Image (cartoon, rainbow, N blue to C red):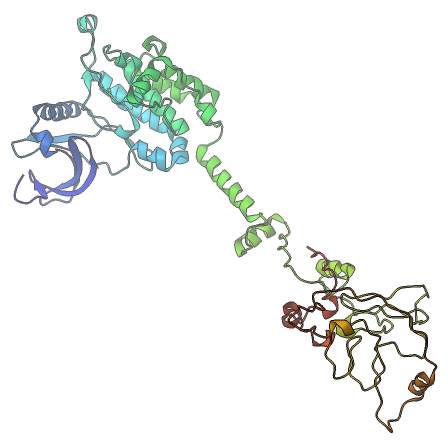
Length: 508
């Protein structure tokens, strides 16, 4: 290697395309030129091995003897003490293996054209007396238009004919790639055209399904499957594969060489007359992608956006309703449903007869002997609240026990003005507050004071609650002193009359 590390044998290294165990592929340009070439360069350790240098020379010899549009042209070989390389055409395209992994549907849609070009390259090699012996997707370059270049002739060998075929014995070593190797090569038998056809069948199987027919837990397990296990039909993995392609691929993968086609030209003819897929793979893939997007846009859980709305409009579908927020009802159920369906404002409630109200908006049940407009007289018991004493029967025109006179504040039952509420006094009968001297009273009130006292009915003691317990540390707040719940204080739409009622379920 010269002093300039990027200059070898008069070629400038531009980009490393691939790296192997003993060689590297570089994009290079000749000094003073802009035309790109590919250089296969021996690594420093391989340069010291004479066997590796012989393999490099052998590959250049095979490549130089071939001239076909589907094969790369070889230009120059140079092996010295400092470096070893040969120059060939640079085909700026990824390998078939890369395209199978990155864009399988598009690769499948060009399967017939790719296989036909590969067959033409191998037919040319066979006519020149060579077998490739390492056919696999990594050794086939394919561009976007479907043009093919077969590469790597390091394992190529002469086709045995005549006497050589009769005297040929077992091979010393198994040569090839385990995933694509033919069964007879594993048994160290001489390679034939049918051996390359088997490797081509494994490659086509991988193109049709995305994976090779056999995979093992270890290298020996993989080789054993090539010898004894029957491959699964490609249509099992890819239902789009036609029965004709199934039969053709399985024929190429026959365990016995005599059951395979006799030559590459026959293979190419069979592929030309075979319909490979039920539907074009790339069109099928695009249709599935569109269906997946449509299903996603129609999902209720998907957030609405302009694209989804446009898609629904084009399909004539209504947009899904968003889930209703948890909120208290402020209108009857019937009106709420009508509002959700029509979008109209709820009608104003009709004026109902006024009912006596307890503190904090609690409706009071009618007392016996009292009638209100629109009511039917029925015997009813007053509604009790926790911690409250039962009300005695009220006589018209007479104040209830514990009911304050006009102008006086509301006091808890059994508590006199200026007194603190004690447990012992909670059961005492309430007394009427004293009026100041000279105070004028309205006629109904005067009549109530002048009425003879009625017999007091003994009331059962009030139920003991935490609020009336002697050990309680806090006094009981009067109803008018209770604070509004947070929801009613912050949300103006919440009706405070519903605070003590059981919450109705949300209407979705």
